[in-house]
Length: 535
Image 1 (spheres, rainbow, N blue to C red):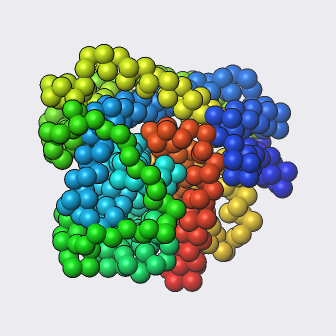
Image 2 (cartoon, rainbow, N blue to C red):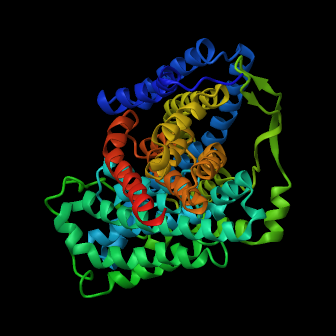
C-alpha cells in the first residue's frame, strides 16, 4: 500500500507551506510567530491523514532539533562576530575606507553584497555570506531590510558548486551520476549554464534594489563583467574541477571589482540619492578615542582571519582530512507510516565535523578579532561579557524559529507529505514537467534551507520523472539544482540569520515578500528556457 496521490492529499501536503506564506507574506508575521503554526499543522496532517505514528513524528522531530542545532552553531558565532566588529566601531572605518578607495556607492554595494558574499559562499556557505554581508552593507549606509535582501540574493548563484561543491556532490551521490560519466558531464554543464542565467538576474536585481532602473543603466558594465567572470567562469570550471568551480571565479571576481572601481565610469563619487535603499542618516556617533588610529586593514582583521583560516583548512587536504576525523552524530531507527512510507535507518544522521564547520571558522574569527581589538585597546574585558550577553539575547528568537522550521520540514518529509507535494506537481503537468522542474528544486531549498538537502530530497525523484516522461535527464537534473540554488535566497533559515545579524528580527515576512517575485520569476524563466530551448 502506498500514499494515495489525489487532490485532497496534495492540498493537505501544501497546507503547512501555504499557511506560512500567508502569515509571513500576507500578514507580515515574523518567523518566530509563524513557524510554530506551520509545525503544528504539519504534525496534525502527518498524524491524522498520512498515518504517521507518534514514534515516527518523535524521531523526525529529534532529527529536526539536531539539524537546527547545527544551524545555530553558525548563527551564534556569526552574531558574536558582528557584535565584536560593531562594538569596536570597525564598521565605520570599513565604510570610510571603502568610500576612499571606491567613492561610487553602487560599486561598494556590488562588491560587498554580490562579489564578497559569493566568495564566502564559495568556501564556507551555511549562511555565512548573509551573516557577514548584512552588517557590512548596513555599515556603508544601506537600510537593514535591503542589507539582508541583497546578500541573500548575492551568494545564491553559488549554491550548487559553492561550499566546495557539497550540494553538487549530494546530487551526484543521490542519483548515481558517477556511474555514467557522460551523463555526469552533461548535467554539470547544464547546471552551470542555467545557473549563469540566475547569476545575471541576481546582478540586475541587486542593482535595481539599490537604485531602480536608472542605476541598472549606470551599472550595466559592472553587471556584465562580474556575471561573465562568475557565471561564465563556473561554466568553464565544471569541465575540469567541480569542487572549485564557484570558488575560483568568485576569487577572480574579487580582483575584477577592484579594477572596475578604478575605471572612468565608476571611479568618481556617486550614489543613488533618490533610492529608499540608502539610509538618509548615518552617524554612528563614534568616539575619536576608539578610531583615530584604526586603519582599514585593522578594521577588517576578523574577516581577513575568517578567509585565511577557512582557505587553510578546506584547501590544505592533509589538515582537512585530520580535522574531518573528528565527527559526531546520532543514529536513528527505521520508521514507517500506515501507508508503508519508509524512512530507512541511519547510523550517523547529519554528522558534524566540529573543526571544519562554518561555526568554528566564525567563532575563531570572533575570538581572534576580540583579542586583536583588545590588544589595540579598542575593546576591554568588560566589553567581552557584554558582547556574549547581547549575542545570547539575539540568538534566542532565531533558535525558536529555526527549530520550528526545520522540525516541520523533517516531519513533512518523513511522513511523505513532501514527496506527494512534488509528485502531484509532476504528474499534474506531464510532458510540460520541464516548466516546473526548477520550482521543485526551489521548493526543496525553501523547506530545508539548503540546496544540498533539496538535491537529496528531490534529485532521484527528478531523475525518475525525466526517465518516465522521456525528457533530457541532464537538463532536468541541472534544473533541479539550479532551482535549489534559487531557493536558498528565500530559505527561512538564511533569512532569519540575516534579520538576526541586521538587528531586525520579526521582519522575515517583509524580506520574503521582496524576494519571492525575483525568485519565482527566475525559476519560471529557467523553466521556459528548458521547455522551449533545451528539452
